[in-house]
Image (cartoon, rainbow, N blue to C red; front, side):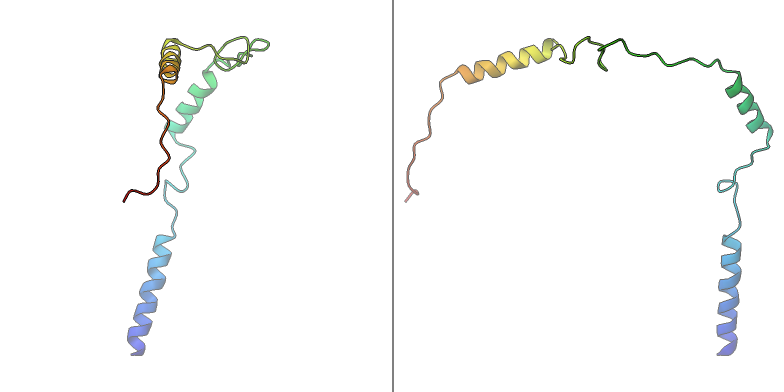
Length: 98
C-alpha cells in the first residue's frame, strides 16, 4: 500500500514539474531575427499625427450635434406618419366571453 501511495505521489510530483516549465507562448523569444526585423520595420514607419476634428464637429463629420437624416430614414418616418394618420378602431370594452 505504501509503495502505491509513494508511486502515485512521485508521478504527481513529476507531472506537475513537467507541466510548469515555460513554453515559447508563455515567454516568447525577444532576441530572434524575426523579432529584430519586425522592430526595425516598426521603427522605420513615419510617425503620422492624429487629425484633430474641426471645431464643433461630430464623429460623423457634421458641423452640428444633430445628425442629418438619410433617404431610408426619411422614408421610414413618412411611412410611420402615414400609419398613424389612418383611422383606428377603438377596442370595445366587453366582459369575459361566455
